[in-house]
Length: 350
Ligand code: UDP
Ligand code: MG
Image (cartoon, rainbow, N blue to C red; front, side, top):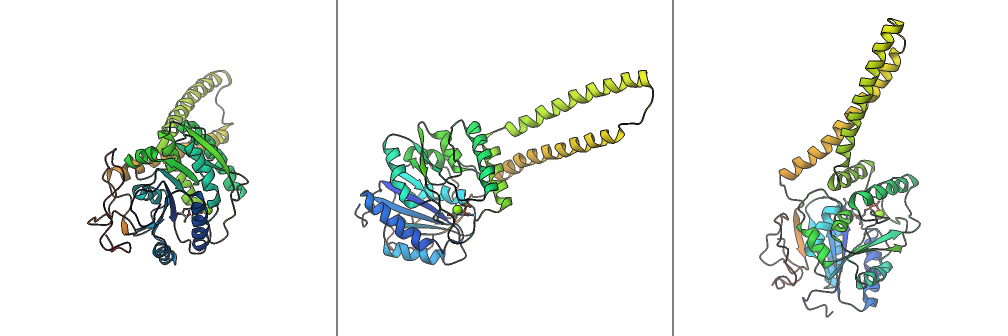
C-alpha cells in the first residue's frame, strides 16, 4: 500500500496496550519488519487502554514515523477485551490480526495465520506451543479451554491465545454485539463458519508483569461462563433437585430407624458436617446467580463500554465527537470511512 493513501489496507494488526513501555519499541520494529516482508498493505491499530507510563508518548512517536499506525486512546483502563472491541471499530483491513503487546506472541507468526485465512478460514486461532506461563495458570487454562470449547461448540485448543486472525465478516458480526463483558475469541468463534488453528511460539514476558492478577482472571472466566452458557444456573437446579431427593430419602430412613431403634443422638455431628457443606454450596449457588444478575444489571444500565479520549492517525476523526461507543452500527457499514481529518494525522481530541 502507498502509506499516504487512505484506502483500506489488506491487513490490520490490532494491539491492546496497557502500560507496556518496556516492550513497545521492540514490538513495533519486529511487527513492522514482519509486515513489510509480507508485501501486502497493512495498518497497525494500537489501543491504549489507559496507560499511565510512557506508552502514549511512544505510540505517538510510532504514528509520527509511520502513517500506517493509528492510535485509539481510552480515558482510563477498561480491560483487554474492551480494547479489542474498540480496535475492531477502528480496523479497516479485510483480515484483522490481534496480538498482545508484551511480545509473548511473536509477531513473526503473523504470516502463518494470514496464510491460513487466505485458505478460506474465517477465524484462525494461535495455539501456544510450550506456553511460558506459571504451571497453575496453564492448568486453569486447560480446564477453561475444554469447558469453553464445549460451551461455544468450537473446538479451539487455546481460547486464551490472543494471537488470532479474523476475516472481516466475523469482525463485523462481533461489532454488532453490544454486551459490555465479553471474551472476544469465544464471541468470534460463535460467528465463524470455518475455523483453524496454527501452532505458534510463546515467549516469556520479558518486561513488566502480567496485567491479570488472580481476581481479574476469575472475573474474566466468569465473563466467559456467563456470556456463553446457562449451564452454571442449570447445574444449580440439578444440584438442588439432587439434594432434595437425598434429604427426603434420609428423612424416611431416620423415621424408620426411630421406630425400630428408638430415640438416639449419635450422628448429630455428621449431620452438622452435611449441613455446613450444603449451606456452603447454597452460597456458591447464590454467588453464581449473582454473577448473572450483576451482568444483567450492568447491561441494562447501558453505560458505554469505553470512552475514547483521543484518536490519532484515524480517518474517523473529522467532525466526530466519538467518545462513546455504544450505538449499534448497521451490519453493512463497511470501509472506506470518511476522508482524512483536515488537521492531518496528528489530530485533535475528539
Ligand atoms: N491489556 C490491556 N488492558 C488490560 C490488561 C491487559 O490492554 O487491562 C493488554 C496488555 O497490555 C497486553 C495484553 O493485553 O498487550 C495481554 O496482557 P498480559 O500480557 O498482561 O496478559 P497475560 O499474557 O498474562 O495473559
Ligand atoms: Mg502476556
